[in-house]
Image: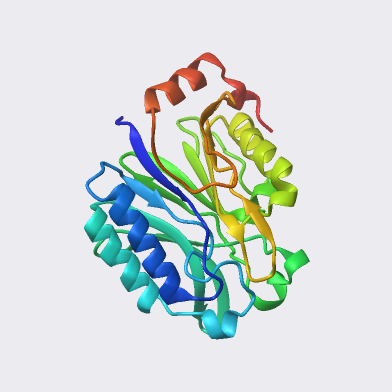
Length: 260
């Protein structure tokens, strides 16, 4: 199985200004990522609006401008792109994590756990299913922000042949004041599920004056850091994770055989 090269874009976002966010990310891509060898590049939660509850005014459809923009950028970068955005579908609003290439939406996941302390549950509908998609043979669990606090939903199961997934990805707008929980829960999810765990968070201040420190990171199945981004700074990083390392850990430490 080949290694996986993932680009993390830890940066600020413009509040409810799609055009400004598109311009901002295009500049980042041009400066840091064009011509680089990545399989998947990730953007923060609600990448084109920041974490807003103005679903009615900010929502799009799956054939709207945002999805078209993501496909165009995927073509320029020659890789897949992952981000969440507000999608309206059949009268419901979803905080939807999409994975696209230059041609199509390859997978999408509707955020299951809605952050009630910000009223997200009042404006959005929760997702009903876990989503695991495959990239270069890797099985990847898609998650969004507040999902990180709910380990039962993300539990990795072993069916006698293989685990559900090899890598879990959390994209977020997770505030600095709860950064301790963010950092420790990402590490915990990696350890308890014997999988790589990646958390991508934003930096800066949003339209509600909430401050974000980023603290984006990748942990291996032992809970050791593969990458820890400098907090409160823009960090654009492509990180390689190794499948042989994952398999070696699982073969040497078979805790999954004793799982409930």
